[in-house]
Amino acid sequence: MKHFLSLAIVLSSFIFSLNAISSEQTIEEKALLTPIMSLFDAMRDHDKNKILAQFTEEAMLQRVTKNNEIKQTKINDFASSVGESKNKLDEQLFNISYNVEGNLASVWTPFVFYLNGKISHCGINSFQLIKQGEQWKIHYLIDNAFQGDCLKFSKN
Image (spheres, rainbow, N blue to C red):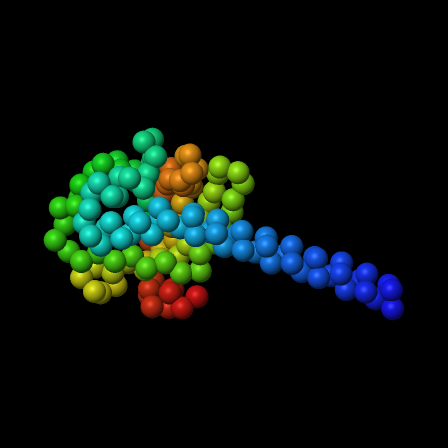
């Protein structure tokens, strides 16, 4: 009986520590998503300054084309273009995965982009984030566009 009680205490402690780790990951994942979700909120609001605030000063924005070319866009040009757009812009993310070590993180997520309420394109976003002070900032964003039916893509 004494061994059973000891085992129960050890198992309870282990389960409690797993729950604590899980909670910490959830908090960290929320912190990682803050600049990403703020970026997409800013795009919906056409807010150039809020877009720029989500990135580091040296940030890079790239897209891999269907021909495997890499197209680079200056963050300022991107923010200005979105800020001046009269279109309704809405990017939706799903199946988000995270990797974090210290002040470096990566977020991988499929997306579907809606233009004026209709699917424009879909693909994969790969974010590299850096923790500056207490905030995560996007340092590098590269994406691609899926070549096919985005409705089928978004169900994967």
